[in-house]
Image 1 (cartoon, rainbow, N blue to C red):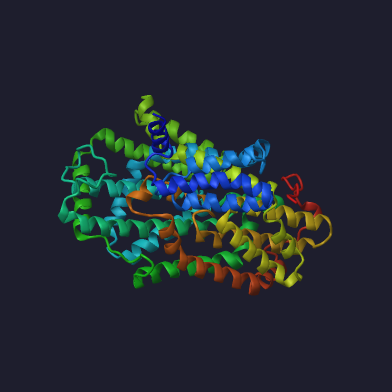
Image 2: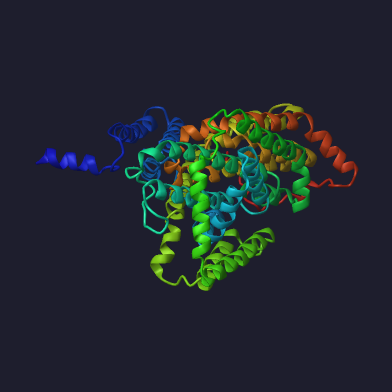
Length: 531
């Protein structure tokens, strides 16, 4: 009887995950307290970070919320961090959480319009190189004025729509029948090779768009959460932020777009797959059938969704309200004017966002461990001890490496606090602070494309329902991001070392930007040192 209970418990623990994965997680949970007692809390903190990255890397074996959550709960129990620190991290990222909950759901209610527009783009642009470039540019421009997570949610919604249309037909069903596009068992043999190629085609578009969000996100004050944090600290307005970043962000943007073209031309690193002719024919047929079946109510809904999309862009670009609240307004407007008033129809919109919101909260618990155990403190102290001329490049590199394994918002907040403290203590002057702030911002934004850990948009894509459908694993994301990581990171480093200071001096001399006084520093924006 006890053997049966034990077997049942083992089968229930992490469900359908492989046995080796379950044993690994149990080994982690046993090892962590032992490491705390023998090697100390700092060693246990680094081990926990490595374990959490492992759960992210194995996201297709088991959604990271459960194993990562168990590790986070244990970290609290063994004293690596405290509930108060975790709550502080969550409060500091409340806007990001609201964005995930409401904006992603809001995009769900605009999916008819998005699918209509992007289907026309897909069918109208025959060249894969041009299509990839357009996806990357669109993601970059939208991310510069909206938000990378919002843009990623749009791209995921569109690609899921494309995938669902073809998978339904490949499974022998017509466009109107209900279908589970996660089940390949009904896919007819003659469609299997086309399905494989279509998955590769969608993977490449997703990665081009994801990298595009990073290319555009670094340029403006609203592109990424850490941009706003750094700009607030330095008292930079929208235009000044763009100009100060431009010596690095614009060359990186150009190098990123050229890399996009090269990857599609060369067909390397998993890129270059064209859309199969059969798939394109099915997409065209679906578009024609939808057009013929579209009622007056459907057409009115498209117009309404278009007007709401305009409000979305205007509301975000003018910062009419926090991003999450703009998303909530999109939900209310889209459902009210498109006739969606049943609770169960509303609930479907939140299915994608809420698991990731829970996962991100667990991630903040791991970030709290990094903060409490001062895991990054030695790196920060070393960089500040370097000669002034080398500090910018060193900050860029250190930020890049740490952002690739941690959260770039956290890394940026820690570094800018330390640099602000150095300015207050007269260890550096205000002009040096401004240059280092640029290096910190670009360092956290650009090299962090190396892994899904660094950018929330990448992590959102990895853990989305679409990733397993198109076979986009953690390892494949890292490999596909590698050429972008190398080219963009080296371009950014070169510009930081060679162009940043002279370009900034040129802007001072021509009155494009002005020198700030140390007293202008915002010391109210959480400058509490972390070590």
